[in-house]
Image (cartoon, rainbow, N blue to C red; front, side):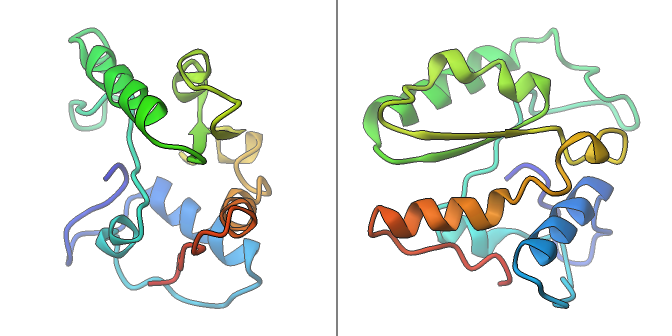
Length: 148
């Protein structure tokens, strides 16, 4: 799970921004206690970065080692075998995946990355968590409880 950290670890800045957007989407004062996103995964949320590793403090440092081949394949398998998936594409690297997603079968929501460097360029206020739940409800699926 991208953005997730083990229990007891400090919540990363990007995840703090995600939590802020969730709270804003649902007008909640809920305080997230940790950055362990296992409960989201149990509900079907799959957070995937296009590059799965980096050197500490060096964003994109492993962008040339082939992770995109793997993550593109993961997206292609999801695209082919599932229907009605809500893809949340955050940042330019994620947005580059649009061409491998069938928009007739799936839903795509786009925004800037939730990192502190770009969060004010369209991530804050995107309402992706509320919209994703509305899409799921419209399909007769269970919405995500983002607060667990």
